Image (cartoon, rainbow, N blue to C red):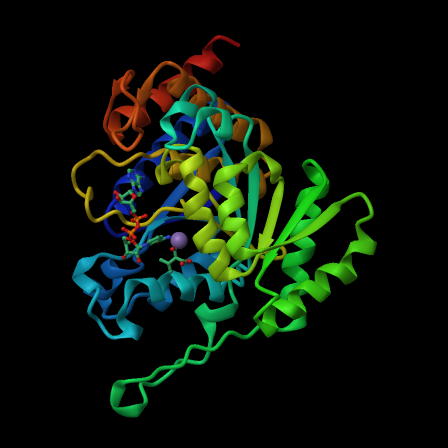
Length: 361
Ligand code: NAD
Ligand code: IPM
Ligand code: MN
């Protein structure tokens, strides 16, 4: 198979972990006779520094013409006091919107031998396997830009959702539940927000189309509590943009680190973008210690969802599992034992495992 992949390294550890994804994909290409070509483009702070904008046209065009896009992370203290339109995060929101990537899938599964790496009790996290389906192109993130009022002392952010925007993400939630364990939790704040009331109505309407899926509604505050007291009760969670952002970082504690969570940002039939859930981690950037697993597992999701290379995706996931099982881990995984390695070594272990597996076939 021949595929063109656009890499958007971005900033901070994004620039480091994107190389890990590339190395692992090169191992897959070599072993399974594929041709992956890579083309890098700027986004975020790196693009601001070079071109004066967080999302150059050339980047958008390249993504539109690619077979799939891998993104590292954007942002950092250097740009934190920039005006809104010149913030790195604007580049990320812009590419999500430009490609209409409304469905963000964030799978969360504890790795067996790392259950004790979670600050949660091992018996609480054991058996957790959930998927957060986050709406990604609407809500508060994309409200009408507000101007400061009242001499700078008041501001407005608007939360807009149309029926069509809610319907398409809710459908994704139901469909994901059908392919998993048949349980959908819709998370909202319908006791307060109008947008959540419409959201809940639509979920109720859609139920009839998916009789094989059991649905429950949970308010977001309670969902935040349940996620870390009894995560095994969840199969698929479908929710709006901001709630999904917050709940997924929270859910990462199940796996022991934010550095473990991959994601897929998808539209109807066009190009998909694959990005770790974590950010640019300025506190560890440039040190070669970032956990590449979230980025590498995002590359596996790309193989599965964009290229239908299910076996190859599984090979990557098995390789990550095997390397973790062998006790190797980066510093973000808080375990007393095991073998502490950096980004490059962790990546090489995973790529080498992929090569060794094929040789033994
Ligand atoms: P962050 O996710 O960058 O980091 C939070 C904490 O987790 C830090 O202590 C960091 O060291 C650690 N961490 C995250 N990923 C890790 C990894 N792979 N390996 C080891 N440790 C890891 O969140 P933040 O500090 O709140 O934000 C930093 C910047 O990143 C901000 O500018 C923010 O806007 C941006 N951000 C970008 C994205 C993205 O590009 N998708 C996502 C979240 C935050
Ligand atoms: C994420 C990030 C982004 C978001 C930021 C950087 C805009 O936190 O991908 O989870 O909130 O969507
Ligand atoms: Mn986030």
